[in-house]
Length: 225
Image: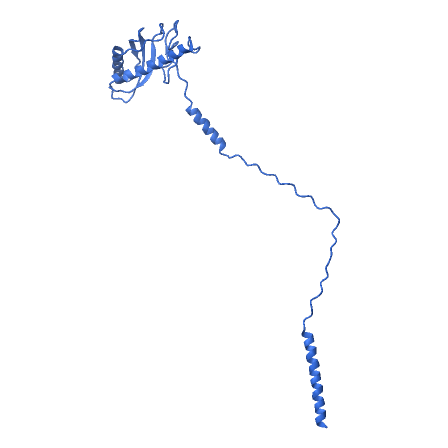
């Protein structure tokens, strides 16, 4: 009797333990994925906003160096531009015929440059005559400078000769006058060179018969003797 009762108790305990295990396993099992419900949002019936205005494109600014470059080019052009040549004047009237030199009183000595012909009103004659006069003025200046340097004896590297000459009809030097420079030694050397030039040298005949006298020159000469 006792054995039967014990078996019943053991069987009941096993059933209870099985129920407990089943319940525990059921509680541990993860739940399935939750069902998602789609939400539909109703937008208000309004027009879309206008598009933004187009951006303004900035124009490229000119380089800042352009004004400086233009100024430099103008300065270079001014520096390269030749200075107007001065005319060689002779004291007295211009005469009836065309002359290679302008008339009037010499206000200052010739400062350099290519000699030109005619006064403020311009020389008389045709363009060919004026071209011949300019050529003669240039020739006289260059030949006198070369001839004076040939006979000049001085220790100085360069001397300034300011003088006047009177020409004969065939281009010979009748006489000359040297303006003093303040240096007696230089003046003596220039006077000796001018005297040798007067005796041994003759200019080409002037293009005009009536040539106003004297012709005044201011030359920079270098001794070659």
